[in-house]
Amino acid sequence: AAELTTLDGKTLSIPKDTLGKVVLVDFWASWCPPCLELVPHMKQLHEKYKDKDFIIVGISLDTDKNALKKFITDQNLSWIQTYSGKGWKDPTAQKYGIDGIPSVWVIGKDGKVISTNAVNNESKIIDKALKD
Picture 1 (cartoon, rainbow, N blue to C red):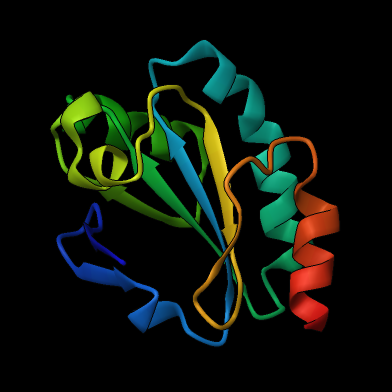
Picture 2: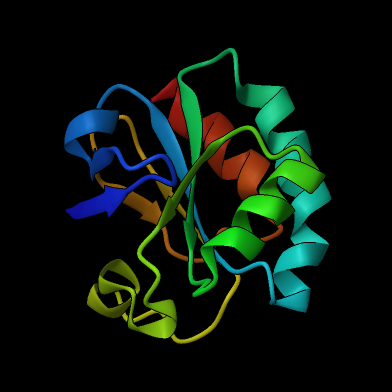
């Protein structure tokens, strides 16, 4: 389970608040070149699945909140973003042993982790999870 704080200061508990939805969790940062390369792909996934029981939750390892907010605004990222301000010491990243980003996970409707390495395979995993 993860207790996250969204950029607008709300608490998001996974899986409690996300049961019934397939959740793509993206550990990322606005200063990470490979993460930035994934942004157009994440936008496509969001567009493709946003009207289904699907959400994206970005867990940002940024330390500069203003830089993060500017990036999200400039890139028009419209999915949930969480932020602790602790960078690599982000409690959720620490808890789940994240030592490289981007790290893309998929959580099923039942709150169980389906994949901890979904990069380049997201659609196949999400399609299956939405059917289950």
